[in-house]
Amino acid sequence: MSRHIGMTEPLETTRPIKFKALLIGFLGVLAAIAFLNWIAFFTISVHFGGDAIGVRPSVDGFVVKSHGHKTPVSEEVWVFSLIYPYVTLMASPAIVIALVSTMGWTTRFREFRLGAKPWLVGFGIAIWAIAWFGSITHSFVRSWRDYESLRSRPPQAIRHSPGASL
Image (cartoon, rainbow, N blue to C red; front, side, top):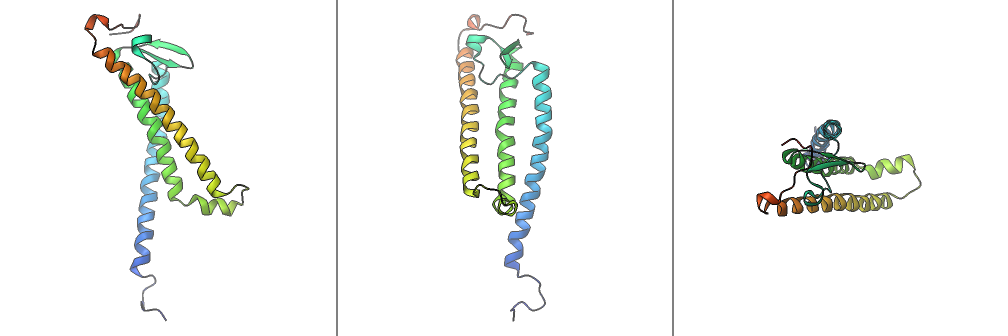
């Protein structure tokens, strides 16, 4: 017989469930915002002609790139096109990974009886995440450092792209 007569669940077991439900709800809202942000990111990238991740302004000038095509932009647009895409490309997958892992993907994985082991899928996602976050961060840092070194030069050394609106 239970010590908690008249109670359906002891407090100790309901608190983690409520916290997990709140966490999943919060991450779900963040995932919805991330999805809307991807639409904004895509729209802005199409408008400007790409993003500045991986672009070195000391070599290329202030341009954005998309699939090898370079579009000249102002310095302010270039900085925006470096920072906003970086934040989007970092935050969105992190939110989705956190949401999926919080929802207990391993138990659902077993329910579908897929051939692979859950730990193997987790390992694959970890390898993908390291490659994704590492490569984008490397390109961002390279672009940002080049921009900082360019800004530290005397003003006449800064080269704006031809046709860029200043």
